[in-house]
Image (cartoon, rainbow, N blue to C red):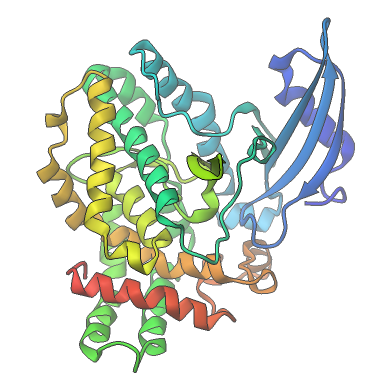
Length: 408
């Protein structure tokens, strides 16, 4: 985003609306930076420092302004508006409801690790959120070209366990309130699929590409089994876009490494925050868990998957019981059965996600350019990348694990 597309006066008008609950006067701001190619596909990021005065003091804010792209071609061909409205719904409605539910039950370690939202707005062809810049508090993004190390994996698994437990407890204790929350959810991933005529063939093509790239590097029987996954893309996602049986919760939905920020204390991993709620929906908790684990695990850790699943389930049940509900609502047997039934979701997302992670800035997907050229908007995510060596390294152990553990 540049000042050529977002004028200073427009940004000031946004800030006055977004920060209205702060009751500040004499608002002024400095632009500290903006997003680059590959940082946002349907939106832009602007980093701003804001100052203003109240009756008693001068107040300063370090903010991330998250703004939807204005390209009419992109907005017509993809669910830009719906994605931003979904995240606005999370910050305006879902998270406050979760926070209240936990507070009423005196939870000392609630699910709460998300950036503070100062305000949201929708106007014309623009949607904007003003979020706390967590970097200002010492949080950092992981190098997306590398797998997360185990301590950081465990912290995020813990947060997902708590997030999903709140949904289960609300379904148990406040079913009408929960039903009302869910009624306001969208399914933006489904909308993306509907917006693309080539999504299934493109995702299948990525599976075939990996099969070709790994010839001679894995046993042919493993590769042949992996190749069969190509035929499962459309049936799986067609089913996944409909209400599914078993446990369903409000899920994060977009679980790759750039959507987490990490915080160290005394040089050691301490906590993690979850960002970007545009793909939030109502689905099996396994969708979040499998997406995150297949997208972020190293080779060593993927071979310790059973321990990680136990860890997640332990945190989910611990938080569920602290909220006053019984673990019998989601028995371990059902959780493990759900894992077997739905873990293919994360596996199918992985070839595309690793292309995000390993794309260089000059070959990062550009949905706006594709839309304005009249091309299929999602095909840009499965084009060949330059960093083939690292792509093969990441996918090789995932292919091997998925076949040896009968996921395919």
